[in-house]
Image 1 (cartoon, rainbow, N blue to C red):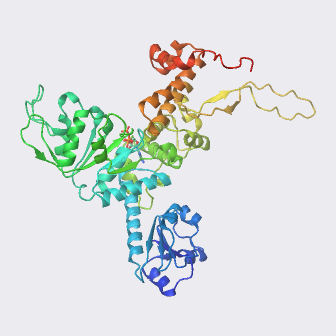
Image 2 (cartoon, rainbow, N blue to C red; image 1 turned 180 degrees about the horizontal axis):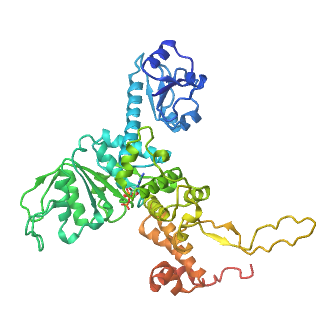
Image 3 (cartoon, protein in one colour; image 1 turned 135 degrees about the vertical axis):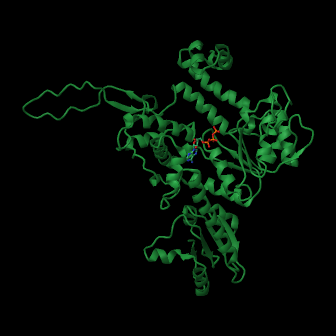
Length: 507
Ligand SMILES: Nc1ncnc2c1ncn2[C@@H]1O[C@H](COP(=O)(O)OP(=O)(O)OP(=O)(O)O)[C@@H](O)[C@H]1O
């Protein structure tokens, strides 16, 4: 149910009409000690230009807040949006329709998000994930535009594509065709896309239906669209513009009509991707938040994947289990019969930065499930050694117990105590490797160009070279590059700089 709040006294009739429309008076509910459902959408009615809504209250609400300006109230809508309002409407006379229509839409969106996330087995209750799903569902249901999903590997772009297909009423009864553009073979002239006729090329012993034909009426999901060879970018542009294509070896153009959802982890506005195709694909661009930006989702996801392992890795069975427990919120970690997680393990998981995102977490859950015994919580020893937070082993830090008469020699403590937490937890590989990886990741997510990327990784490569005593053979091995390549990158920095004759050597 949606709520309303009146920022200044208003006519009892207005209040009565809002209540009659099914909205709960948020302040009255507070007075009764019943909290308004915090994540429901609501409206703040501004009847007095001097009674501006409390920005903190607007921004804090996890549900969307509409501000309705009564006739004669003139407040800058942009500043209200900046304070956290989701939208602003001007009321004319007694007509409450603009308010009710919007609240109803927002309720529908929230309901769709709950239902479709559950159906897709998509776990997550963090606000970043929910905001993303709201935008996704809104675009999928109320627009026909292509959708471009930006996001790191394993963040859930394909999961999102399934949701788009399900939510789009015109497409859901037809097929969702998934095509990974990294697997498209240029020598087959895009036969994966266009299909081919029998005998079109050596080995084409039968006719083959391509993705464009199969997706007709439905949705075509192009994963890693940035990897599409240039010739196929031109062909795809034509299909998107004209809705026609020709099979390889065919003689006539055929019609197709699908919704295009594309995904990429890189900035397509850089070199190598056609600008005209980019603008077609990017009619609606949504960013899938990486897992490190939604630490609240880590534990629910981890427990979900553990439950999946208990069911023998049967994803369908887990989804069915979630769907058949209607009292359980989609994304809730109460949804499954999964073991609890000890505090130490929970802290380690939340502290990790998950470069491989949800996929990495899923794989970790599979490793942990193999070690975990019984129904008790997952304990630190359940994490395989290579997945544990790195800790320096230092001199024993156990204080000997206070000794009173008769004098007893304090026992010698032999087992080394573990102290001094290492700054990076659950690091993948060596600190050098992870340093290089995170430099590349940061640079890519900042959308930098190739030159800048090279410069940033050169910094890390240089540090590695210096850390290993300038031994480029060892550094190159650590970085997985040739000695020559490393030498080239580090040459300018690792070598001692010639002394500037103008500088004061004594300083
Ligand atoms: N919110 C989620 N809830 C449950 N499982 C998820 C969620 N997000 C991702 N996954 C799972 O994580 C794995 C990776 O997800 P997905 O394939 O959608 O990522 P991606 O962004 O498309 O990755 P890539 O770019 O490498 O293709 C899959 O096994 C998927 O089922």
